[in-house]
Length: 203
Image (tube, rainbow, N blue to C red; front, side, top):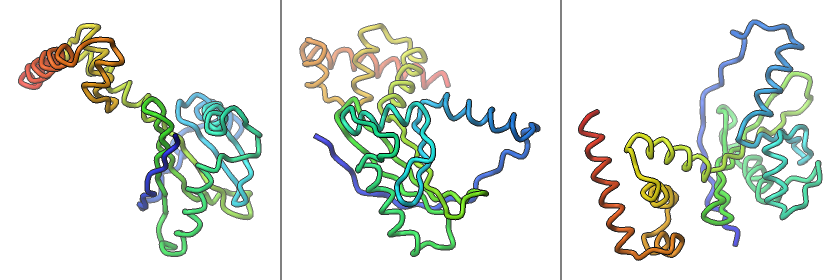
């Protein structure tokens, strides 16, 4: 089941340019290309008609996932294009601001994505393009949980339970997933919270 949460509107100040990087144009382009391709987040640049100008490897993989295995290089998943259309419909209300629309795509508990869309006015393009970033929320939570596991010195079993808890699993769901009782989950969570409190008292 695919769920799409309500779109959020926010404005931000203009981003800083990369003028501080002292590279020739071709080297700078290669450098930026490598950075974009190496990102875990999906990066899509779209025309206002929905054609793909550029998609990094992550974006291609995620679009394929959203389209259930079908990724035509010039086809934007409807879940993403809906956010883009919302931006078009809202931009005249905030014409003096840099507008970003943000939405969430929920495929299941392990596949939650934050979509952000903004207009790009690029040199060499007659009309603005759309910059779409796709962040895997599950991976972000996982990275935070891994840091906390080390920080709180959790056991392997506590780490499993903490990761699921941080991923919004209920005690009952954790118990079912790990084939243990709810009381065992509660006991481990009590130990985890004790370790967290001890860690915070040292900070």
